Image (tube, rainbow, N blue to C red; front, side):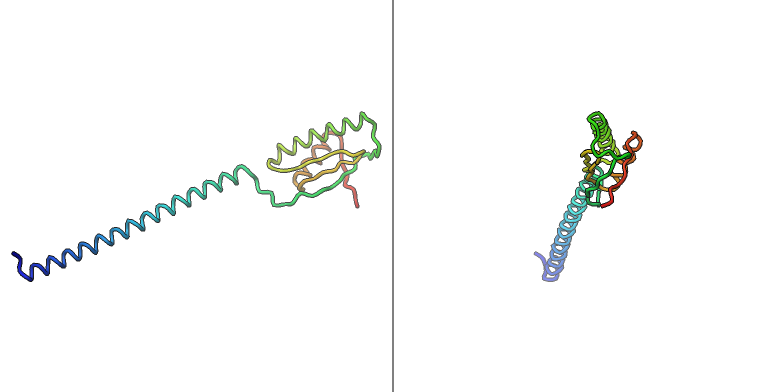
Length: 141
């Protein structure tokens, strides 16, 4: 049988052991929350990195602009129109390749080339058209 003093000491020891076990549980819970937070952060960062790698950010809004051919021919012959349309198609493909993720488009109406896109796409298009013998001049409205 234990004396009263021994029982008190043993009781204090049990109390300390229970408190320590509670603290260990708190550390384990905190550790689990920390691990979860780190894992969630890594998933979030890797998914945003994939988005930014696959899609360039284009902050500029596309707008419409028209250009005259040089020399300007308001009613080109069928041969001239077909040649101009062929070069426009070629240059649109060049823009798509050089500015991925863009939404550039161009079409021909008479001797006027209408474009929709951002300035960077339009510059690449203009450069291609000039390089293929069909320089363009902006229409001042």
